[in-house]
Image (tube, rainbow, N blue to C red; front, side):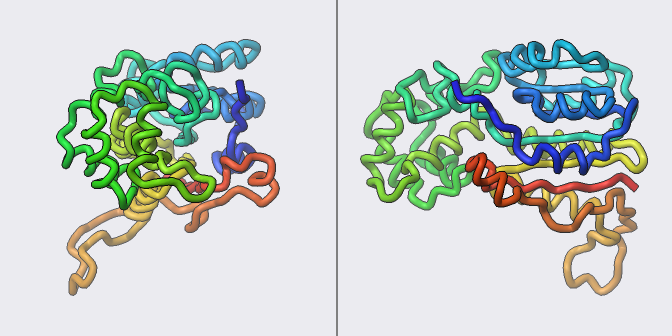
Length: 300
């Protein structure tokens, strides 16, 4: 099993300005890399993850540290989680939206097309809809829309048509073969990569959860508190960028409006205005980090 390498580890902890005794919420606990650094710096840590296996693994890694609370929930429930914990505001909130290497390579979940596994893709086994449900039950046009919208796959119609022709498709390996038969293969990147991304996002409602989680996180930030979000594809980054810029803007009236009538008060300050990217050295050591973008803002 490949160990997950935490992306932008030092940059994220630095961006949050972790202080001893401060309260820091990690909305994507994962393997606990960011968690360990925050706890070493003396922060009071709340880690949230929808994947129960990730929580169990992190519990083992972080066993020797006090001042932590680990919760198996989706971060779209952030406000209710904090209410239950009687946390009224946080000094820092972190989102690391990437799939961990452990999740990608975990057997039996169908996230990867490298093995022939059940087509599941759920972060939590309590979720109702699996990737197999979408692949085998969605009308062709709806399936094509999912692949296009969430995978940014321009060949979505061709792929959806071939999938429907080959139903039922129950395994990741079979799905990868069907996608490749529809569009062929050129270069190192497998042609099913975008389709798998689209299905995973749809199964877990990742973009809807992100929007909800961001709204709640900004509300929960203490004055001068920091929020840092690490994204790995353009769909996520676009949502994050637009949300932070809107919250940092003095006016959100439609472009071209003759006068400002919105009465919008900015709640955030961008720190910095542009995304932070991995260094060349980090990309060499961990090629999966190459697409990472971190955006940071401070509550005002």
